[in-house]
Image (cartoon, rainbow, N blue to C red; front, side, top):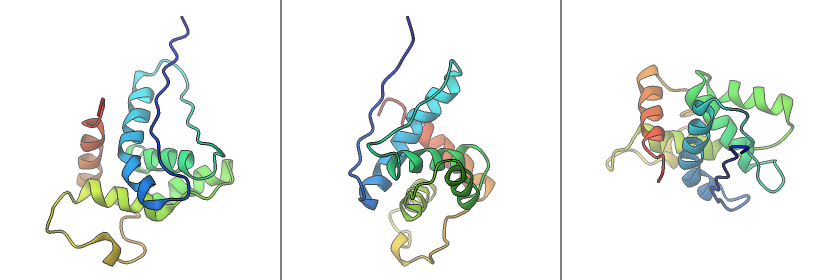
Length: 134
């Protein structure tokens, strides 16, 4: 058999909040597929311009030791597109700062969560991996 796995992680197109909420589970699915190491992983949305690139960029940011701008520039140099950086930053914030008393993401500076400390990256990775099967 081919060993093809189809995984869906729906998000509304051009909706930053929907993308922000979907990213951790989508990246969890992508990380699982990559960690299996049995072939290639194809990530796509309808047009391939926003949601799918955002998933790939978030994966590169959270799991490939890149800051957000490096991941964004690396992918968009290969595939011209316009994924929502704010949604990726918001999802990063949600994963790194899982605290009800935290300052709202919307009140943070525009560059907040474009990079994370090593301990935050490890925390994000653990939280994303724990979403497998969710």
